[in-house]
Length: 406
Image (cartoon, rainbow, N blue to C red; front, side, top):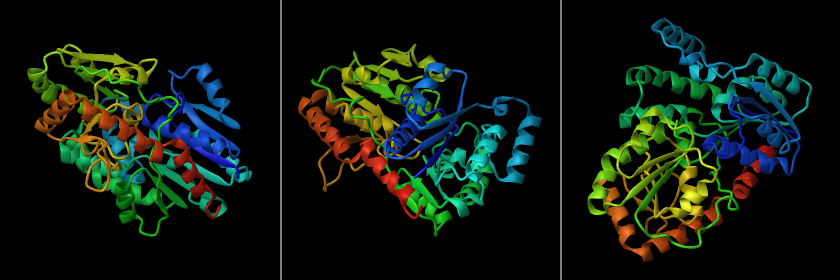
């Protein structure tokens, strides 16, 4: 089976963020069993060495320069123009800004030449390259990392939208867009049951499969010892809106309360491309903003607890799974634990849940004071990942979707 993978995000190295991690590991699994062609775009920070290393992972690699993002240009007239196009064409500016005519021509020629049996779009932003008539010739799959409509709705509900007026106007347009593009695909893949329910409402007849994220257990080995202490950590790409909100909320509303009881508490914010809001947190007592680091797992192994205080952002969180795989006790919100069975009477305790500042203080204090509880969460969290959330498990399920009726 010849598979064509479309990803406007350059998926290497698989440490830059959730989108890259999922895309790389799924295509890596598929390429070990089938001829895989990857079509992708590169930003200015992608090195020639990284292109060469990614080329070794697939049978054929086509790389295009990413178009300059016209969406960043200021000016009310430009914004009105972009909204008018969205209203008229039904495709969001965030998708159009990444669109490459050259890449589209390449994809069209590849399909017309009959060089693939299956097309997979990694993340919904790549749906624009799939023509409606492709579905008559081959299997078309969209791997929806998270619903754009549900994400916008959640950001409005939680009050963290960057521009609430704009998002309120865009919301019904995003609903129409998601419903429309999903109809082009033979199969839809999502990361959580919640996203499946959301998309099934729009497309009741669609074949929708839930495939969770995974962890590379070699890259995230279980730690050998509990360091103790009062060291907290958050990991993730720090130019992501949901991550920015999470660390700002925690730093401003939770950490000072914890430091009243445990004055030596530190908070490491570990991840690439920290925004100005995140960099400003570095000035607060006990907070260390690292930027991109050579090894995320080294920082995790030194931490007492990993916090995942997400208030928005849908889908399985790689950061939560990676912390569990590394044997780090986790305190997380409902959003941070989405898609994971971590508490309740039917299974062992694998993480502590918190949403309000007082709940975080209580949960973190429990873990600071109780080495046995830390050990329990460390063991149970690692077991959960090993048995249900490896990339081999996810890759096998993804392969089954590709093979089904193809």
